[in-house]
Length: 262
Image 1 (tube, rainbow, N blue to C red):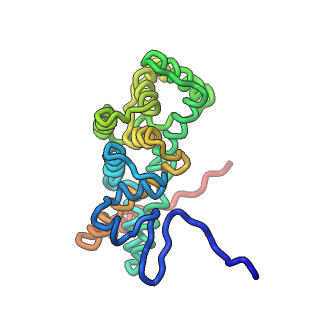
Image 2: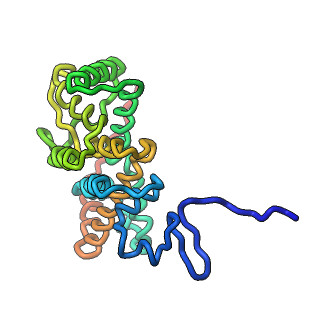
């Protein structure tokens, strides 16, 4: 007899009478009892987070939900202007803009910190500072951007950064990634010759890495958070549209410039 075909999953299954999610009965065990942030963490890690982990994780989601008229928000609004029948297209357009300059810094910073911490276990602030110096010198020599440093709007301090660090500290979850990130904030002026703020996307990546979340998925959590912000922008676009004004302002000020000749 042929072996019955099956595809294993630890996420979810369903039949005519029951939906199973993470080995729990969705209707009886999860609905009304588990918050969305807690569930998102659980889905990825396959373990239920502690209350402290949930608090830090949801603080990250709140921190990354929106930052005004960023390119991602504008892309979503203009896509909605062009195709109002496709809310999914507008939302997707905004999410597709999550890259190395907006949102993607969360993952880039987590990767940078994790790579720097590989094979070393600093314990004191002095050891973290020295590790940060080495990483910054190497990045500068290679002409690589240091993710998490600087912000186009917050030139002195990103208001999200101290709050997230403080909450992680309160919950006993200020781990090596956050400590190294803060060390970068302390020592980078002597290496780079200028002082830059530690930005919210970077501190979010450090906090997520300290929660043990896979660095290869950190951008996904940033997108999860920003999806809520984009949905808010699209709801506002329905109530008080600005997409047409943005489009006509750019279009009416377009000027033909001949291509330069090499």
